[in-house]
Image 1 (spheres, rainbow, N blue to C red):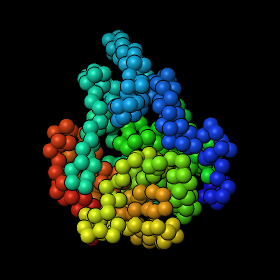
Image 2 (image 1 turned 120 degrees about the vertical axis):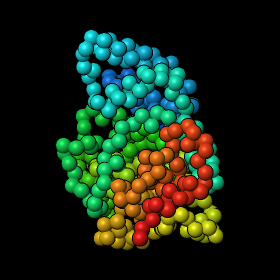
Image 3 (image 1 turned 90 degrees about the horizontal axis):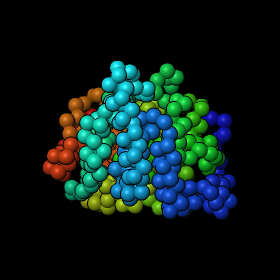
Image 4 (image 1 turned 90 degrees about the vertical axis):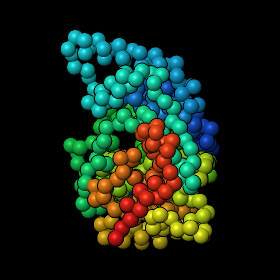
Length: 362
């Protein structure tokens, strides 16, 4: 685990009075810094920075209210630059993926992008994520084998220089150097990508020290940040980047997988996937290590004092339904993203249940 090693909880200094400027000192401080950071990203050049801010704004109406005026102004400037370049046969600087997304935005106009919509369908939390539907597929669409793939310096990873403009916070957190980047297309509140020891170029393969680190970090952050948690997609379970990262969020409502109705929480109803709930990090590691030995992909949800774990079929080894782009950690825990308004309005509880069953092993 990198050069830093693991620092016990008593040595944690990134939260609290010793570092009053830390965004982790309170929920209000974090959320305020999150929005102001987006304002800063909006001032960065390029289409990618704009898309990131727009996607975060339409996920949360409060963010859109705060940033709508500068966001609209930036959209008009970038759209005019694109029209001028295309009208004169010039290439537009930037990544092809960003250009595709922005051209879709231009096609429907600034006011054509819908705010995220949310509803419950039985135990499931559904959302219509309009702007995320414009996102091109990355590694998550590929059929894979095994549970580990070496880091590829030539592939997409978090060391790319242009990603530094998407960093929300960087520093020593619970004894490790980390970067917390904004998620470019969020699907949970205050969605970030926590990348520990980025320069060590660890692939998306969870080792014991990093498992213990994220377990303890969740507990420590929960002292000041209500609703904190981390999602994790293993290789083959819709991890979109093969560079070690965890998906941080602050969500006040309980995740559907935490509903007391389910057997793993002591209730009477079986979850549609075999779910393990661990309250001991070492017992959780025994399970994780077994999945590694068997080369079984999995999705995880870390919450303060516990971890939900689901072993599942690998992406590409089954045919998912047209209404979903595939089930990663958020869908596995019951947060279902749709990209089509009709699907969002008509999706039924049993349809989600049936889709989850496609992931079952055996």
